[in-house]
Length: 231
Image (cartoon, rainbow, N blue to C red):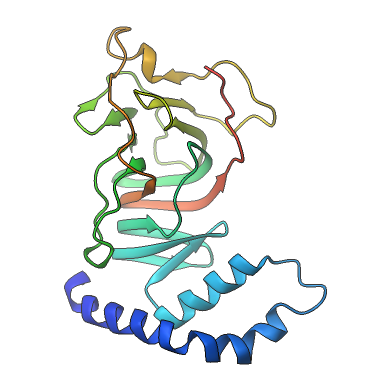
């Protein structure tokens, strides 16, 4: 499916940028009128997705979508890759609402090099590899043995955090919503993984982020403005 859409995606993106000034002149006035509570970035992102026809918006965050993914109504489901159109903060902290299908899997990736957007790849960085039975932290060349939790096939709300500004990217996760106020501890701490030796997974390779879905659904992504865990 992806190969058949590559040329359409490239031509659509080119056309979007050519038409953008005219489209904004005609359409942005009503969208950005007095009393509209959406910010400029959200409106521009939504209009761009409409023009390109190959993107996905989840919780006000915009992604290039590749593979057998259905993005509709702020929800992404299926099998494929979502690559964010924005860079992450140095502390990449999110509340994620997701669900695994049968034999499903989900990789939450941060601290990565920018991949080849047109082929739908994201260079492997750091993050969490989740299936129904476990969720393990990983780096470019290592995967942990401890688990954040086991989501099963039910809708789950988790708080996942990556401290990308440390010499070894620090991964923290809790199988629960993010705390409103920063707290000291998290159920999963990559520094305590591998028998207490820690992952030793090296520094971030970039600020690219995204998701790899395998028969999974992402219902919502909420990016926290700062760290939720102080470890």
